[in-house]
Figure 1 (cartoon, rainbow, N blue to C red):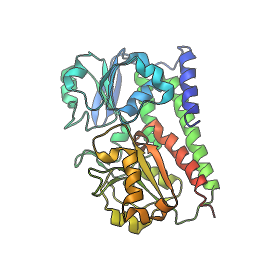
Figure 2: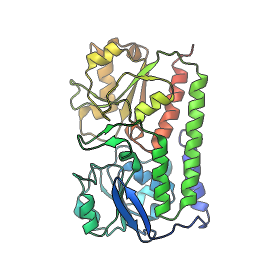
Figure 3: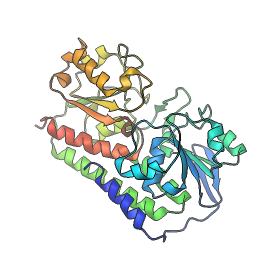
Length: 337
């Protein structure tokens, strides 16, 4: 099954003896340009963002997580029992007060728009003033400019090593580096296998794809994946052309432009969030089958439409699982030369 190795990691971590390479405290880190000092392994943490929450669970730190927020998809099935014991402060952005009220020794997030210069939860300074260290995934800052929009724009292609750096830093913060190394090794193994499988497919050079996240209104230009985010990395890694060249993380592109680009396949995001009607995968599929322009695409006529969890389109462990799923789908599309 898709999550087999992740489940194995969780099981192993639950049984592992507490004998890891010790972290030397105080630990000083630079997180998105902000100096963070961790005096000792935190006993409590609030996680704002599904990506960081699932990493903490995979590192065997569920008992340290005192609250979570910002969920797009259901928690990974093998982490459901852990998650049931943790309070959900909000499905979206929690208030600064609700986070501070838990008196965490650390707060972590996957996004600067949650905790950053204009953070929906609060700024780094607000957490500093409350004497709560704040840490942001490196994926949010390395080669990425978040000053012009909420989603930001990437100046450098997403690299899974940024994800692995984040896992390593979290493991170091909590003095469980051996667990972090094991999780990273498993993810790297899966990534390598997916790339090898895609290469063996011997796909034609003109295979192309587009990732559709959502639409503010089903009748207007959709939010699609830019060239350098996680979906752009997936496509480039598998030797597939992204029909979108924008550096923005999630630019809007007109359906006329998409249709003219003739994508070989379409990847549609599935999520529990219902901010927009098109968040619903059923609405996406109905549009593709009914819209006069969209339904004429070969990708639609041949039913080359793949559904992937929205959170897998963000920097997260799910991005590696999605790379596998995309590879498997390509094998089933019958595109090999």
